Structure formats: structure tokens, C-alpha cells
Length: 125
Image (tube, rainbow, N blue to C red):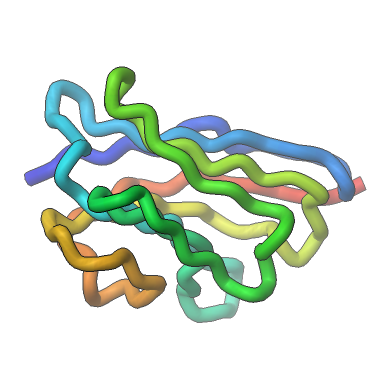
């Protein structure tokens, strides 16, 4: 088991920013591809953005391109999700997920074996 923990969620006004983090305690995330997913009430889970461990390549959903950025700090064993220019439609529970693989990351949930408990992000005035 990989104990993923997300943090950094909260309430923010439209146009604001939040930074979420994903850690795994004493476990190293170095060799994992990491994805961020979200699920809004009454909607299916969707892939938001991901980062591979080989080359650090990233993939983002069209809905968040130019607004969300994913990065990893292996020294701090943390993956960050920087969210800027937030919109009300970004409101959801955000989850990080991990898969021990050298393949390029994807935005498909079934490709990931480990999931965190999620953190709520609410964008509202």
C-alpha cells in the first residue's frame, strides 16, 4: 500500500489560486507516475493533470490547460498541483493517484493503483 495524502484544499474566490500537495509519508514517489483527478457532485471522476517519473513529462486536460501546473519535488517527496485562475466549475474533491510505472502518465483512472482520500476545493464568491 502507498499511503497517499492530499492537502491544500479550501475555499477560494473565482480567479484565485490554490496549491495542492500529494505526499506518501516515508514512501518515495520517485518511481511513480502521478495523476490528479477530481470529482464534482453528481459527476464522474475526471483526470485533470499528470506527471511521469521518466522525463517529468506532463499531460493536462483541455479544461485546465494554461491554468493548472503539476510538478514534483523528489527531494521533498511531494507532487504539487498549482491551480490558477480558478473557476466555479473547478469545484470538486481532488485526488492524487500513483502508479509504479515508467510509462508516460495518463488521465485514465484505471491506470493508477493507489489513491488518496481527497481534498475539497470550492471556488465560490
